Image (cartoon, rainbow, N blue to C red; front, side):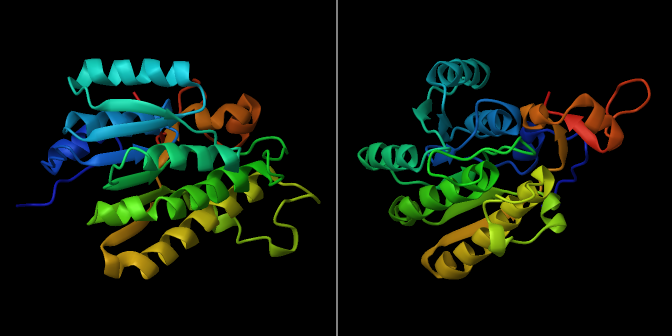
Length: 252
């Protein structure tokens, strides 16, 4: 069978259809799946009969997304569980609740993230981008290793970014308490994502758990909410007529 060819206009549904994948009954957990690429990833996987569990801070919004996915995919095995990645206690609560259900995990997608936001700290005192994008997912993933082992061969997918090329880890000031640069802080968190995935695969591939990091491409989503229109224009994200340059696509 020839490998399908995809391009900038390809959708998540195109990809799963192109590979003719079926995930009947496989359990998929996706963080940050109430908007953007997360919700479309959830929809695509639900369309091939996976049991999809999305996480949400806002359970009302999460419930609306679940109902929409069920309606469009005709798959009733879609649900939402509460998770706030700004709080490590919330991560622990999620893990406890999930483990109480005695379900395996076949695919864990660490998708949730924030980008280039004003300086703030998580509930636990970490710079928000590092805390949400990396540390919370680190705790979530390592805590769910028993479920991933139960679901093997299983996959961990960490959504990173080519932004990692802008910065390594600022070990001397990992919380950016001096001279905060929102873009370098974002880049640091994405570098951490990649290093995390590489080490996970190194440690657990022999046990049937493989980990991957990825760059999703340029997609206009709610992730850009803290980047002003003026800044987006200055970075060349828009054409003169106000449409996005070919570098970007919209989730729709």
